Length: 468
Image (cartoon, rainbow, N blue to C red; front, side, top):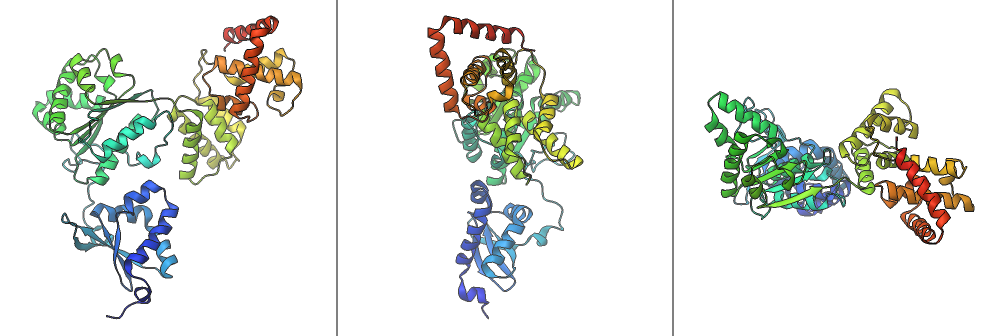
């Protein structure tokens, strides 16, 4: 057989290693480790490069998501294009028959990895996990890192850790659904034959009621108890539903005793689910309970930046910071604000601006008289000191401006839930150490100056009584 130029110069392993290096530079580490690290080259022919992959799903995923990147890398290393031919390992880790995407694309579409393969599309229990909800797209910060780590551990070894059940609780829009569906997606990638089923507790209840009406309770029970991984959202919905709780109690016991993984979410701590039966609560405590808190400023900003990166869009940093500062409690609202901004820019051909961001925040933010903003505090302090509010953000070191700025920082810390970083951003982008220094000065003066303390107390009372 005549060897090609590439084969004379490179062996397949060397070629593929160089291609992998280029790929690794262009995608994140987790994606690389998932899809390319487990692969290896077998042969190089004149027209194609033969690659060994762990299973058939890798072929489709790489072709659908990374085909252009792989072809560019091949061209850089070999100086010419070559198509990829995939060989899939069999259970004994030996190469099986070669597969190419074109070999099996004309066949009936394979079942999505996010759908239980045992259920037809017209099944009353048909489900589909959102393929966008993967670990790679989940932004990790101090508010959710423990929950994220637990989710990864469960996804890597479902049913084999002490985290069974895994229960994630937290407020609306903080990423609970994203995280639990990421477990399902990851488990299906890693264990292609695993039966994963996701449903809300409302859906579970609806299925149960329908099964009673149709005299198919046995079928309902058998279906849910056949899952290898059951992802159930919003278990607080079971409150005051006695028959549904009883059915889920038996389903839970059956899955747990057979080493199947159970993942649940709730909008509040388990001990506060007083309308659930005690026997359910006690079983929930067998595993691991983790919470997701509202994200801090740094995490909110990271979420916005990632969404911009994923959309290949450039939004000025000050606009992203404004959104991150003013939408604190809900990731869903934060992403919704950015989506609105992108829509306005796209449909009106206008440049993104702070005024546009302010308008969107005003539309999204719910009026709440209990929330006092830093802007309102700054406005009042500037009025008391007879200063333009912009002076509080300026770099000037005039004594009266410095004192007013430090008082406004102090009141912002006392009367809002903002972090020092967020407060600093409102005052001309000052760092948290500057804020700390200002707080220390005010606190020391409060101890020594009665007149100053009275003046500050008056400002504080005015702001508390006039929040809206």
